[in-house]
Structures are given as structure tokens and as C-alpha cells.
Length: 126
Image 1 (cartoon, rainbow, N blue to C red):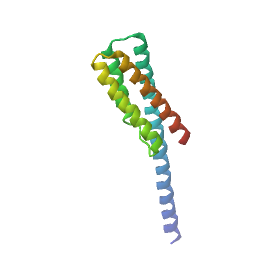
Image 2 (image 1 turned 45 degrees about the vertical axis):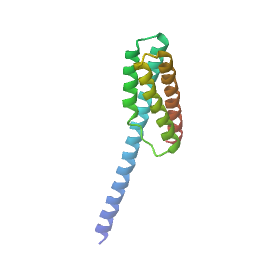
Image 3 (image 1 turned 180 degrees about the vertical axis):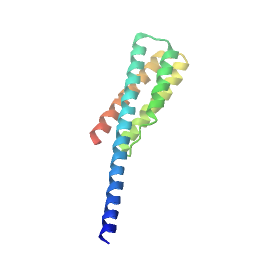
Image 4 (image 1 turned 90 degrees about the vertical axis):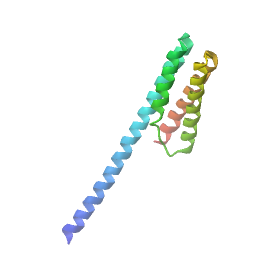
């Protein structure tokens, strides 16, 4: 009977450890996605400042939009700011495709500011 109790305890501890490891791994994946999104948007903002072709900037915006999809959190403040940044990326893409480099550039920079805030808020809670 003692062997059975020991076995049950070991199994319970193993599941708890795996859950913690999975959380830590997911946390690192989210942080990496935030970092990559911010880096891509910094690259896009620099391209705007240099006066790069709108198509080049649109590609960077699309890459950032894909990268941000893996950012997931249960914190509503982070989620709201992420959604605002995502909306600005969509608007930036539309403006750039329409040839409005000024408006598109402003939206890229606004999205960059939003994702920097996402990074700050996420890192503060994780």
C-alpha cells in the first residue's frame, strides 16, 4: 500500500513539474514573439524614415503582423494594447498600398509604440 501511495505522489509531482515547464516554455515563446515583432517594426520605421519604397515597408508590416499572432496572454491590458497595435498594422498596410507613405509611416510608428508597451507590460507581469 505504501508503494502505491509513493507512486501516486511521484506521478502527481511529475504532472506538476511538466505543467510548470510548459508554462515557462510558452512564456519564453511569447517573449520571443514580442521581441521579434518590435524588431521588425523598428526595421519598418527606419525604412519609413529613409523613404524606402512602400512595397518594401508593406512586406515588413506583413511580417510583423504574422509574428504578433503568437503573442498570447490572459492579461487584458496587454491584450488590448496588442489589438490596438494589430489594428494599426492593418491600417498602415492599407495606407501604404494606397500610396500614402506619410499616414502609413505614422501608423507603423504608432504600432511600434504599442508593441513596445506590450513588451513592457508583459515583462512586468511575467
